[in-house]
Image (cartoon, rainbow, N blue to C red):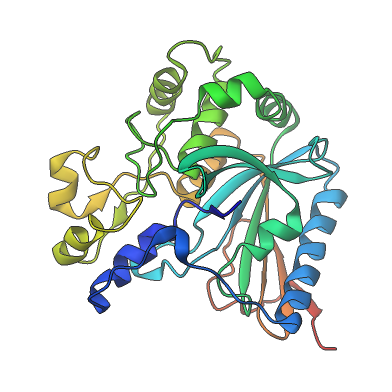
Length: 299
């Protein structure tokens, strides 16, 4: 089964005009060398070590997949890592697009597979948010509730889904709505998505905005599979600012709602892993600062 993460189509949209033939979302693939795979697996082991040492049962996890720097974003794909996931210790429950089924679905993936989902194995970033005990327990219970998870799952996928509509959904939108259902103690019944989005609005959740560099790029994106504009308010499109749920939106919201939450960020390049504990971001360059832990990847 070929699964693609939510933000991938955004980069395809950004590069679409570079050639006469538009790229196809589900046809892109990644060839990874043995050395690259070894490096990413060692990175994944460091991530899992942080999870195991946390003493918690759940963590919000995000990955930098594609280069979304032109949109002002580093992280592209979020999920929920669960210590007691039936799919394996610390497997990540997440929304993915199932290409062979042409629909979104929920998927449990081990930390190694999650880390290998980055499209540039020479570098990678993963962030972990560890929640206060009550907030974490509520989220873990909600994430393991299959009925609730499916009630929040849209039948139609869009990488740039409008965060306050129910026509489409992306991976990060599902995570945000699950958090709302957990912390708002919503029952996930008939209007599960509408209720979750209403709760997020009342609590001050801000999705994006994702800044589109040009009107031409906005136009080109409409011809890329799994990117849609027909759910966004016209004024947002004119302003080149789309209200899309991205990992940064979720992290900002969690930090405001649960100030005691702890953040750990890990990144790697070809020679080292950098681990930073705290809310100050490492940045795309993965340069360590005093106080960071550095793990050599030298053979």
